Length: 215
Image (tube, rainbow, N blue to C red; front, side):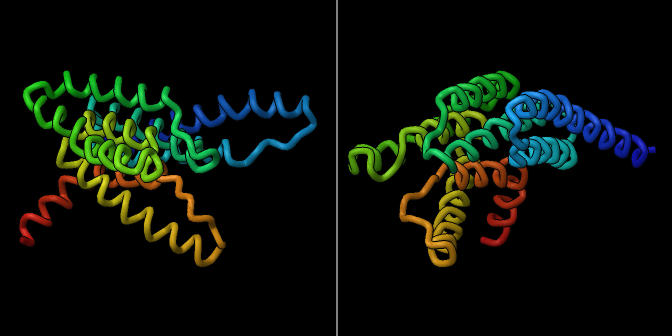
C-alpha cells in the first residue's frame, strides 16, 4: 500500500514537471520559429533539470512545506547558476526570492529562529570581511548576498557545510577546467556555492551526524 502511494506521488511529480517543460517549451518554439532560429537546447534541459530536482526533494524529504521551500530554493539556484556562469553576475531578484523563501521557512520553524538568524550572518559576515579587505577583488557582492539568504533558510550548521562543499567543488572543478580546457583564472563562484547548498539541504543532516559519530 505504501509502495503504491509512493509510486503515485512520483508519477504525479513527473507529470507536473513535464507539464512545466512542455508549457514553457511551446511558446518559446513558436517565438523562435517566427525568427527562423532553432530553439536553444539549454532551456528545455534546464527545465527538465528543475523538474528532476523537485522529484529528488520530495523523494528524500517527503511531502511537506519544507520540501516546497527547498523546491523554490533549487529553482532560484538553478537560475543563479546559469546566469552567473555566463555573465559573472548574480541577479538581485533571485537573492530576494531566496530571502523571501527563507523568511517563510523561518515562520514555519519559529522555535529555532536563532539558528537561522546566525545562519544569515555567519558565512556572509566572513565573506563581507574578505570583500572589505580585498576591496571587492576577492569575492563578489552577489555571492555574499546569496550566502546570507541561503543561511537564513538553512541555518548556521547547514550553511557552513554548504560553503565548505561549495569552496571544495569550486577549487577542484575550476582547476580541472583550467588544466583541460584552458579556462581563465576568473571564477564564477555562484554555481559552486549553489551545488554546496543543494548538497547541504538534501544530505547535510546525515553528513553532520556521520562526522560527529566519526569524531
